[in-house]
Image (tube, rainbow, N blue to C red):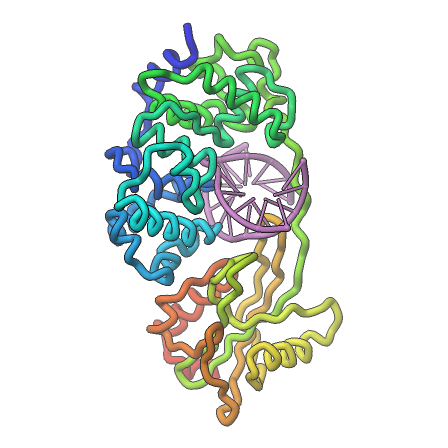
Length: 360
DNA sequence: AAGGCGGGGCC
DNA sequence: GGCCCAGCCTT
């Protein structure tokens, strides 16, 4: 029997009830697909629900402030996704009359939408026959057809795209694509695939050859590089000094406690004090260590120490574009990420228990 | 073609 | 502690 038929029959009985599968609203499909990029279903669910409560339709998102949009993304990672989504939605609002376009060229031209996401939106929302090839599909097909090449290579991707297109259902491309992903996440899993319950076991090359555990071939990543940092929780009265990170690079545009990279030697305190003065113009007095943690990103590791500091009252520097003195009410609108989010939570708990005075 | 970009769950 | 995830963008 053909792959598509087996897959659709299996999917009919075992598809999951997910928040974004309740209807075919292109906007909801779009949001879910962006959130699901490199992110597991279970992690996305609560974010998706909160998002739809606040931004129920395309126009409500298009009209929103970027600050609030990013705040709803806080903790989900890859924050440029949120900015690109907002930009893309505004493009649709202005150039397409608020209707998500229906051609591959138009959809892929929107910010944050690449080959995979375009295929997913068009097939799921509009039932267009477009492949949607993600990590799951690459894995499933590398096993089904014994693709021995590194699946991150363009040659392997091209070959698999052709195979998927050949096998795709004519009548139900959306269900076909989703079924493939469901299969990849629940049965044809990375380490030890559950071939005993796989509907495609009889047409699987890897299973036949007993090499389902060796495929797919994928080259491994380099270990993250470690960096030592010190951050200042700088207070003056009920106000704390926060800094907004640049719009490109790691944690782009997110707010943080002013941070200085320190060396390996014992001069850390002096380097920190001087670095803070250069970055913020602020003279500080170090009081004590509040929190120390290691935070691992994909390609970087932060060993960061948060120090409680008092700003000299006669040398307070006013706000500018990327530097702000904020009280607790103000900073609850801002977005933190990584270890700075942990620090923020620590402060909020502290503030709930006692007043700021207890820091002194 | 390669590297940057988060965070969390699972083994 | 390593691996991997409903990838995209820039260089």
